[in-house]
Image (cartoon, rainbow, N blue to C red; front, side):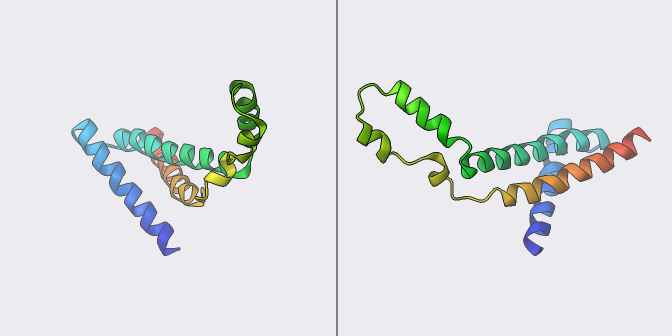
Amino acid sequence: MKKIALLFLFGQFIIFILSFLLNAGISLLSYINTSFYVGGLLLFVGGIIYIFRTGSFDFFNSSMRKVLSLKHTKEDLDSMRSPSEVFSMSPKVFFQAGIPIFLMMFIAMGFYYS
């Protein structure tokens, strides 16, 4: 829980710094826009890691290796590691940091549009 809180606070700090630097000031609209980019990036990276790690991309990768590598033998293709073996990082950290940022963005949008 402490790690999630620190990630959330660090994300909010980054959002305020980027909002201040990119828009020459902090406003509710600049906070909403910047938090969308930061939260979206975290969720996108977490999603990519999740797709690679669960093995959803392994079949596509092995098929493309077979089609595009005419010079390699079958033993060379079988000895190559699949993407699910390469990615050992958990996407949980990115999701735990990105979802609260998106929730704060939606709360800020509620204040902005009301």
